Image (cartoon, rainbow, N blue to C red; front, top):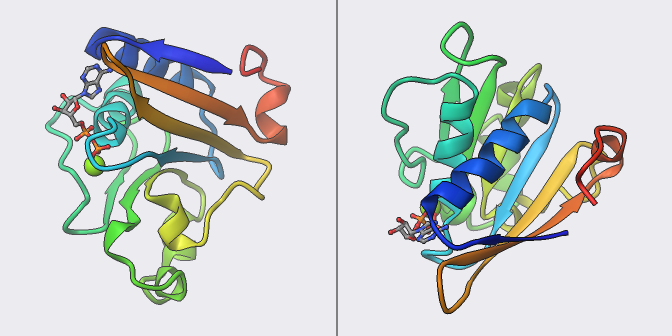
Length: 149
Ligand SMILES: Nc1ncnc2c1ncn2[C@@H]1O[C@H](COP(=O)(O)OP(=O)(O)O)[C@@H](O)[C@H]1O
Ligand SMILES: [Mg+2]
């Protein structure tokens, strides 16, 4: 599925759809180069899950976590750009962070990728002449939720 994102409102609308369907155990894998709009989309998802505060970019900390009641479900927002080897994802305790939580993952390939997981919603962001475009590929668990193909 391809979604045109001509402006921030369009990114926020896609984020709201994702947030409405998001469940514990899921990964929203956000790929695309620097400036593609990954953090923007992730921030809108965190906000659509109920978070009222500023959402920091996890590019320095690698992982930011959010817990109810500030958000509808436990959430991990990760930016794996600085990982030099996917094994480092284990070393920072990613499995523990993910337990019982949904994850928004920027630079997912740097952590080994998540597209083999049935709960992965893969989103590749690209720049266009006006704004951005999202190429959305749902894992098996997302198909039953409808409107992701
Ligand atoms: N749908 C969109 N339309 C226009 N500009 C956007 C859109 N999404 C993000 N941007 C802008 O692109 C720039 C980079 O966004 P960012 O989310 O930080 O990228 P990334 O995390 O992929 O490096 C920001 O200035 C942001 O405002
Ligand atoms: Mg970013």
